[in-house]
Image (cartoon, rainbow, N blue to C red; front, side):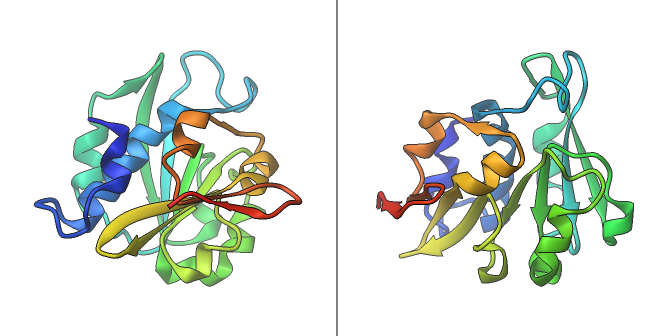
Length: 173
């Protein structure tokens, strides 16, 4: 699968959340976590908080998949108190407004927050949207830095916009 799934038309043959699931699975190749947060051989955990819009698509794509030496594990939780230590946390629209609570939840300290609603746009490191019938994403580097995660320029180049820490947003598309 190509990283370009993040730029596919929303009305392609794949439903929206299959495209977003593919992006989530592939984007982890373009992020670097601190060694203490993702030690060699440890599983890379993607957690879904709140209602799960992906259905089985995320599980199917993650099954047997490894990034470097890290197996990808998917976890779902409905309450923040149940949040496992995670590397990527998808904040569903059902809990988007409590996102700042997600950021401070145990298990989220080195997690990239990802969302796809207006409620996650201000605090998520990556936020999906649909523009002109295409699935696009924005990157908030300050949020990624707060998690201690470095995002590759390869991923940044595909973003519709990149919000730099303490500077203006750079519009791409």
